[in-house]
Length: 109
Ligand code: HEC
Ligand code: HEC
Ligand code: HEC
Ligand code: HEC
Image 1 (cartoon, rainbow, N blue to C red):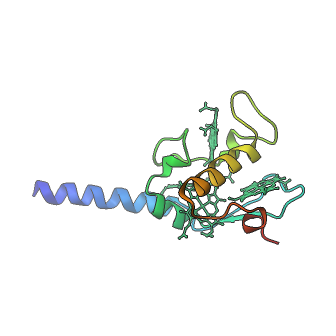
Image 2: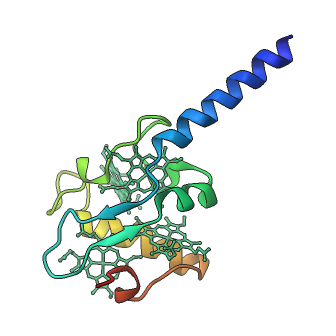
Image 3: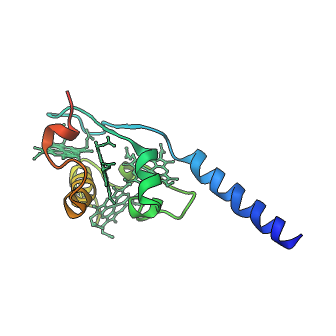
């Protein structure tokens, strides 16, 4: 009986998390000189396994857009949006030697 309760709790928690993560996101907050970038959000979340690897300031289940804090220019301690994106995205791709690091592989026309 106890086991069944625990399993239901674990199962429903994972369903809620999955439903909260958008499938695909077009990142276009700045859009001055480069084409928008499409992030396969759910595929990344599934592979990386931990939302907080990217959503570093948010508790599980309370993920916000990066642009809530990372603005077009540095705001307080938060680096500008472009730096946050390049740091996080390209940073992991070059570290793991997987995923795009060339400009037009992310900024697709
Ligand atoms: C590879 C990095 C990465 C991972 C891993 C990741 N996200 Fe995201 N997520 C993003 C980015 C980037 C955005 C869009 C940010 C922006 O446009 O400012 C976003 C946006 C979101 C949004 C939309 C917020 C809004 O207000 O529209 C939600 C909700 C979200 N993520 C939840 C999750 C959850 C839940 C997980 C884990 C299951 C997860 N994310 C894993 C990078 C990631
Ligand atoms: C609630 C505010 C907030 C949100 C939301 C947020 N950040 Fe940050 N971020 C900060 C602050 C403040 C810093 C400055 C360094 C620190 O305090 O950790 C920072 C630093 C960074 C840095 C540079 C230092 C480091 O930790 O590598 C990167 C890269 C970064 N953020 C990426 C992201 C991405 C990608 C997202 C969205 C998935 C995001 N941030 C969402 C506030 C935020
Ligand atoms: C913690 C590691 C990690 C982070 C952070 C990360 N990625 Fe990736 N990304 C990968 C890996 C690994 C692959 C290769 C996946 C494969 O080959 O199956 C990849 C592949 C991609 C691809 C090509 C394949 C596809 O899914 O479309 C794009 C585009 C991409 N990432 C964009 C982004 C963007 C934009 C961000 C930042 C918002 C980001 N990634 C953050 C690990 C990461
Ligand atoms: C891993 C994916 C990725 C790679 C590789 C990448 N970028 Fe970006 N870049 C982004 C994301 C995501 C944004 C935020 C897009 C937005 O908000 O419009 C961004 C924003 C920018 C911006 C500010 C937005 C604008 O339209 O002016 C410039 C400029 C830029 N990148 C130039 C480059 C250049 C030059 C390269 C190659 C040296 C490059 N990027 C490689 C993901 C990437």
